[in-house]
Image (tube, rainbow, N blue to C red; front, side):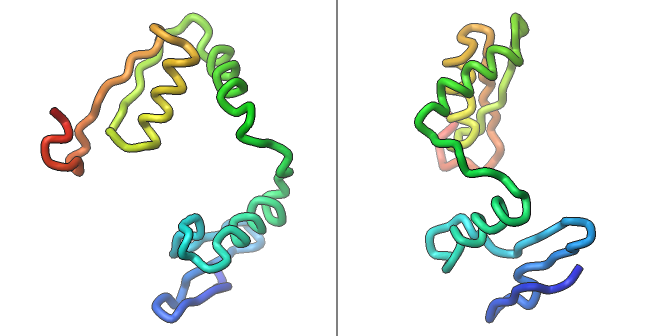
Length: 118
């Protein structure tokens, strides 16, 4: 791996093995206070991964629910919910897509706020 980015606090903020097409970051480009974070993500997605940015969130729920229904068929699905945004949104989407075929199970991961699991 070769260093391709540093910060005042991190010598290896960005690394790459171009031959193996492996890249890594030691910071969060997705957070708002990361200078040029959106540009870093855009460059990675479009220039390195060669993805096309032709989708929008406008039809996401409809398309995702159709894809879930097709994938699940008549099967039953169980999903763990930790109380965080990601697992909660995923559970709501699953419930919307397949209704009673989906059963959410709450998992106390040990990092909840006091009395949040009651």
